[in-house]
Amino acid sequence: MTVRTNTKQTGDETECKIMCRLLEKGYTVSQPFGDNDKYDLILDTGTDLFRVQCKTGWQEDDGAVLRFKTASKTTRNGEVTVVDYGNSVDAFAVRCVETDTLYWVPAEQVGSKSTYLRLEGPEIDHPHVRLASAFHFDTALP
Image (tube, rainbow, N blue to C red; front, side, top):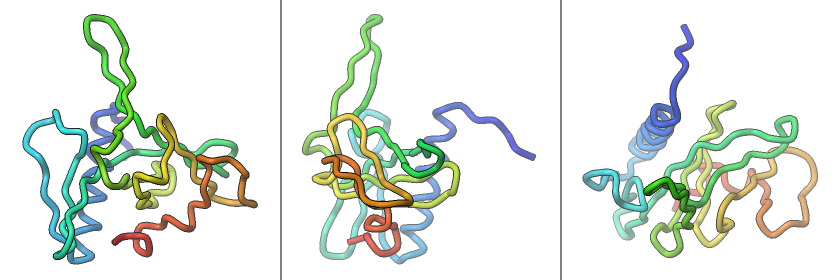
């Protein structure tokens, strides 16, 4: 049975799947208390700590490109504000919703609002479109 979820549920599922995979790989994972931090979890490699923002991505262009947001969108007093994560995160852990595939993208390799990972076909000459194969979770983790 497929249950339709809202965006909060989808985000929680993404975060949970990422955490589970990290734990399976032997990492220690911590979560900040509350929802007000710019990162969703802390990855402890045993020697380094990484602030990780978990994102859900969607396929575009007939499944050739995965897009995920790299900015936080909030509404205060009816005003929409979009703020990038700046130096607040070290990496983005991304789940492709259609394939359930996970990616690890260092923060210095993302755009300020969205980032695109090319899933198939030739590389695209654009500063924020990267080949997804370079960021497969199991091989790209620190």
